[in-house]
Image (cartoon, rainbow, N blue to C red; front, side, top):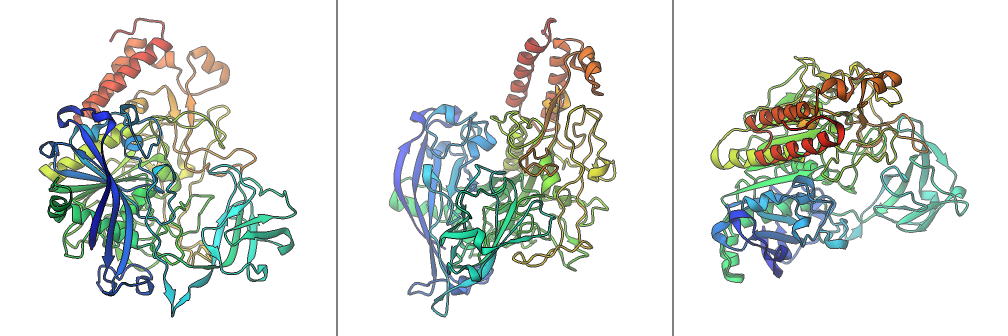
Length: 639
């Protein structure tokens, strides 16, 4: 239960700008504290809570960072709070849902807020820390670590730490360890390397590596750099795991407090009482996976048996969870074909539908059916089908049949989009062979957050699920994709596989227990036929994919993390024929700029009718189409 909220700063937000009828907002920042009864059945699921320090009441105490944005005028608050799960300590609500130009944990001005939809609708926005190791620089949010002991002694265990240089960030000369080494004796550790995830591990002699200190290692002789993209595994005795599952309980307790008890608390402490009739959870990527854990592990029921979130939207999670509620968990990891492949993330049950797993013998659902499940919307990009098993949300575990989701759940593919797509996505190649995919899914996400709000507060059901299906041939095996033979384009023919592999420290994937993951089928242009086809895909000027391949010096031929590809159409028929491109050129598919704009308008109107696009976003798509028409066509662009 939450025991106190300390508000350290209350300030006007964005220079007291007015957000539509809601008016001005204020920002509150501080600390939330609570304590957990380790004997409560709702808390016993937290790994090592029985070994955590306790106060005089026998409770485990926690402390998390807190930030809130709320209307200054309580009467203008719509009464539904939106809790965004922070991603590695970062707030993504504005850059991940509202088209703001880049991440900003401390937005100050209107330009930092994108279209500010959630504020214009009168929502209170709430963030809190849940990860002890989340960076707190630049206003990142975390929680105080809770270190368990066993019989009064530090917990020590040999773990495996996968270390990679450059393919997801800046190349390094020193590898940092997530946990402190219990000893610097190299005889008790082992370092291996392999080029590809499927390659056998080759041991590196102790003479060729060394501890720099208890939290980092380097290769020898001095100056030796890790091979870019190669996978180094250090097996070493680590100490002091954290009770990471407390983060899930802290989120539960905070939101429950704000919904059911904050009225009295704030009346007493700040004279600004609020009461919220409903709460929604939203999150992208790691945060979306966190939401799936929050639901499946029972944290949507508070200690008094009340529902916490009425609705939840998880984006870009695939069927993943977070490597969190585990001894020596490492929540920042995210599994793909190459990196972090054999860490705990993808485990049955995958779907909101109740299914049977023939490999583990388990039967279950992501939802608990205990009366406290939220209404659930799961959205994914194409990348999650290629890298994170998203097809298993809507098929059986073998990928042999479509399944019907329960009435309280929906699933959507935002077609031909890459994992991190946003308003600032560009076509720079990065570490990939093809240009990267700039398509932005956020317009669809906004429409679905509004639909979720209406589902919770008005009982208005959202649009039907919109995902690839076996029955219509829109879900296929990767080698049956039928991608066009575009000259010079690198093409993926395998996706990440999910298999039963046992222990994460010494994993042994079972080739006979591989789940049936499928990918979205494409049209003659290479764009996906199923899912929410935003106007850029329905009326395309290029091919957009959710996959790309690594370029040298990284692991050529492997899927390039969660990046997609962008392959523009030839402008003219002559250019197309000269290059051998089978896709129609822009001049062949659109009679004029006016024709192109007209088709965009038609596609946008259809999505608005389906409640998969807001009218304001439809208008924005048309405006961008008019700009493109002016640039690409010489004819009159009046529609």
